[in-house]
Length: 178
Image 1 (cartoon, rainbow, N blue to C red):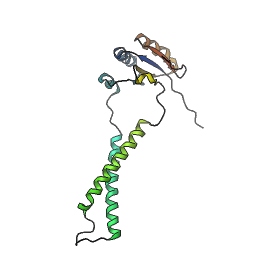
Image 2: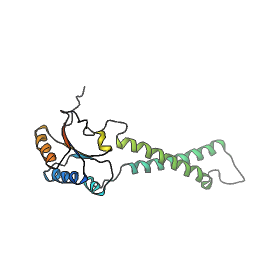
Image 3: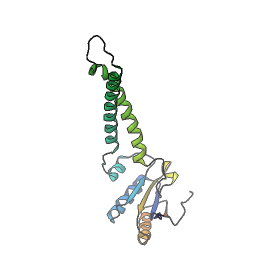
Image 4: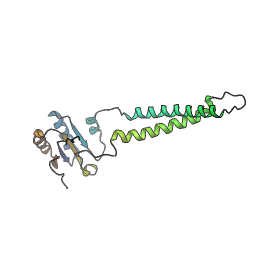
């Protein structure tokens, strides 16, 4: 039986965007690069911290679209060959007649693959981050710095210097209710 290793870190809650961004710069300057940020609004300065990552969902969409196109081709070609419907001397397997089902199944499979990939890569349904607090979706900004237990006090002091509303340790302390 595997034992689950608990994450360790410090969470800081900020009321203002400016102090929140300063705290992120300070955390990065101190050499801590394992952190998550939580924000109730989308802001371009925050996007810069997260970096540009290519989404793996697009590959799933391509695979789904190709599977739909191949599946539609096989479905229509095999059904025509099994039933052997010769119409007016035209070829039995005729590409123009298969274009509509091919298009429809390509779109259907791509959409379903995209939908499932978004849930899979987002980790849904699943547990939220250990540093998440519901208030981060409402009216304040949050940063969760993943670190060892020895460095927690140092990070907590850094966040408090940058005007954090509240700071708490993960998993030792309970999250504040305010």
